[in-house]
Length: 219
Ligand SMILES: O=C(O)CCC(=O)C(=O)O
Image (cartoon, rainbow, N blue to C red):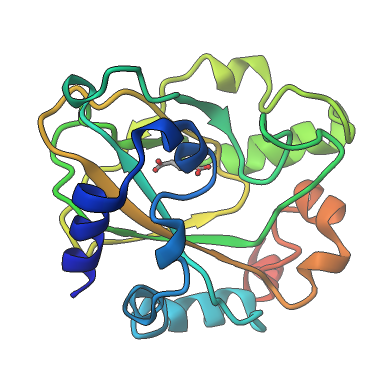
């Protein structure tokens, strides 16, 4: 059902003139609250894990769909996303605006076996380096998304099969680039917020465990 709806949208409704906007925000914007897509999160064992990690969650009601289209099928290249953490210094937003959250939950919706096929690339452990940077060097309004040493790293490709979950701390830097393979790479993402996150976005950038009460004691 999910695959059918998405496949139908990709084949019949996607407007090639809007690829940049879809890439910045979401593909299939009209599917953003589709119950079968939301069910990927709410009927998924990771929701329990998210609850264990964060303690108290704001309800999740929207999904972000990100497709990396095979380059050979495009007339104009799809924009790449440089190393970043979500919601900070987004190129399409005011640099003073924070759109942060606590935990990124992803679901792989296509075979991602080839790192060159538009895989998400992430930096394990990068959440600690980012928190240090936010504490010591960064201030609201600067347009760099990550410090130069993290920007220089390619990151580890996230490979997987349809249905595989991803749980990623909000401060883990990640990037995505060209899809040199023959098939679209499709991911669904849910941005999960601790109930208090909206009141302490700046502090949560500087303290990686603020939104993770269970882990803050261990850390
Ligand atoms: O296409 C992807 O998987 C990456 C998405 C991403 O990094 C973002 O939307 O900020």
